Image (cartoon, rainbow, N blue to C red):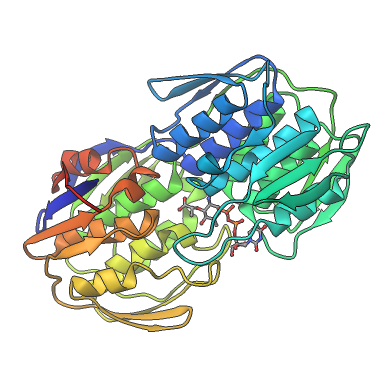
Length: 422
Ligand code: EPZ
C-alpha cells in the first residue's frame, strides 16, 4: 500500500490547472449506457473511482477507451444487465447504472452498495424512484433486482423527502426514455447533476429545471452519441485553495468554475484568504494566520459536506474557535482523531465539532479513513512541524489524480512511497 511522506513548513506558490469533476464524470459515464454509438467525454480525471466505473461498464458490454483525460465509450451492444458485488463494493456510485440499465434494457441486477466509513448510506430513494416509474424492485441476496413493465418505464411525479444527489441523477437517467413526463420535486441542485442533465440534453433528452429543486423530464424514443466536456472539480479546487491558504502561500489556479463555488469563496474570505477572480482563473493569497469561522454543511448551494474535513484542517491552526456542524451525514468525523494525533484541539459532540486553533501542529503517523478525510491529513502535514506520514493513501487516489505531484509542483515537500503490510 502507498503512503505519503510530508515535511511541513513550506509555503505554496506557482500555478496549477484543476482537473475534471469526479462526481460529474461518474454519472455521465453511467448515462452512456443509454446511448448506442460512440461518445467522447473530455476532461475526465484519472482516478480509482473512474477506473472502477470503466470496469463496471465493460462488464456490461460497453467498449471503453481512456487516453489523455478523454473517455471514448460505445454502448451499442450491452451483453449483461448485472453490476456484480465485487465491483460495486469498491464504489457506491456504481448504483448509477441502475437507472440507465432499466431504461435501456428494461431490467437490472445491481449489488447493494456497502456502508461507508461514516455510517450507512442507504439507496432507498433510488429504489423508490424506480418503483414510481413503474419498475418492480426486489432484493435478492444483496442485489437490487429491478424490472420495467412491458411497455417500458412510465413518467411519474416523484417527490424526495431528502435531497439526494445520487437518487436525483439515477431517476433522471431512468426517466429520459420513459413514456411521458416525469417531475422530480426536491431534486438535488448540485452542479454535477446539472452537468449530467446538460450531457443528456446534448444527446437528445428533454429536460428542464435542472439546477433548481424541480426537474421535468419528457421521455424521448432514443438518444444519440455526443462529444461532451466535463466540468471542473469544485471539491478539488476547494482542496487546492485550502492547501495554499493553510501554508500562507500565494498561487494561481486555472480552469475553475467560480460560479459553482460562491459559498466556498465566501468562507475562505471570512477566514482571511484573498481571492482574485479573472474569468476561469484565480489568484489565491493565504493570510499570515487564518481566522476561525463556524461552518455548517448543507446541500448545494450551501457549504459542501465534501469540504468539511478539509476546512476543519484549516480551523486546527486558525486564530480562535470554530464550530463545525455536519448535517448531511450522521458521522462524517473520522478525520478528527487523526487530526488530534497532529496536536489539534477538537471537541466532538454528536454532529458538532468545536475546533480551537493551536499555534502549531506536530508531524506524526496518521491513517487515511476516507477520501476527503485523507486530504485533511495531508493539509495538516503541510503545516505540521517535522515529518508526517499519511498511510493508506489509496483513499485519496479515489478522488484526486496524483495529488502529491500537484502539491509538489506548488512547492510542497511531499512524496509517495510503498510500504509493506496492512
Ligand atoms: C454524492 O453522494 C457524492 N458522491 C458524495 O461525494 C457527496 O458527499 C454527496 O453526494 C453529498 O453531496 C458522488 O457524487 C459520487 P446523497 P450520494 O444521495 O449521491 C441520504 C466524495 O467525497 N440518502 O446526496 O451518495 C444519504 O445517506 C463523495 O466525492 C438516503 O437517505 O449522496 C445522505 O445522508 C462522498 N437515501 C444524504 O441522503 C438514499 O437513497 C445525501 O446523500 C440516498 C441518500
